[in-house]
Length: 199
Ligand SMILES: Cc1cc2nc3c(=O)[nH]c(=O)nc-3n(C[C@H](O)[C@H](O)[C@H](O)COP(=O)(O)O)c2cc1C
Image 1 (cartoon, rainbow, N blue to C red):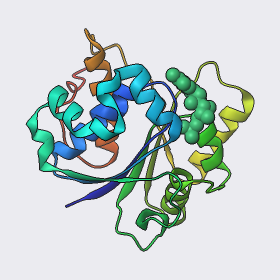
Image 2: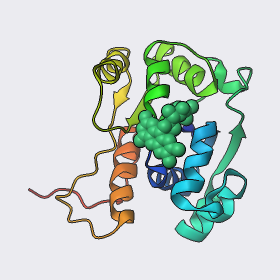
Image 3: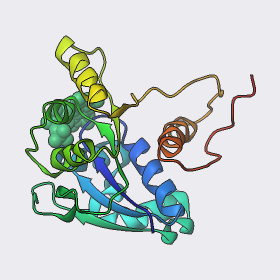
C-alpha cells in the first residue's frame, strides 16, 4: 500500500484537500493525515459541519462514493512531533500540503519544524522525497513570494491553487478535480480527473 502524508492547513480551498484525499484513497493508498487547528476550522467553514475531522470518513463516502474504502488513513495530532512521519526512517513516499497557508509556507521555507506539518515537510526535503505545496493567498507580499522561491529551491514542487479554465469547468467539483488531478500526476498516478488537453 503506497503511503503519502496529506496536510490540510488554514488556507482557503478545503474542497481541493477533500478531492485529493478521496482520489488517493480510491487508489488504495494509506494516508498519514495532519490537519492544523485552522485546517480543522476551514473544513467546517467551507464545507460545513459534516466535514469535521471526526466525520471525514462519512463525508468522503457520501460525496465521492464507496470507492474511498479501498484506502486507509491515520490521523495525527499536529502537536505530535514524535509521530512516525516526523522521522526520515518512515516509509512515506511523498507529502502534499493542500491547501497551504502563508504561515505554514513560511515555516516550511525556513525549516522551523514548529509542528508536525512543518516537521514532516522538512523530512521530505531533507530526504529528497516529493513535497507538493499548494499555497493560496492573493495578493501576495514579497516575503510570501520569497518563501515560495525558498521552498522551490529546496526541492518542493510549488503548485499554487490556480485551476485552469480552458477545460470549461461548470462546477466547483470540476475546479477541485483539476487541482487534485495535477497533484495526482505529480505523485505519479494516472487519472481521468480532467480531460487531457488535445491542442
Ligand atoms: C476561513 C479562513 C480562510 C483563510 N484563508 C487563508 C488563505 O487563503 N491563505 C492564508 O495564508 N491564510 C488564510 N487564513 C488564515 C490562516 O488560517 C491563519 O494564518 C492560520 O494561522 C494558519 O495556520 P496553519 O497554517 O497552522 O493552518 C484563513 C483563515 C480562515 C479562518
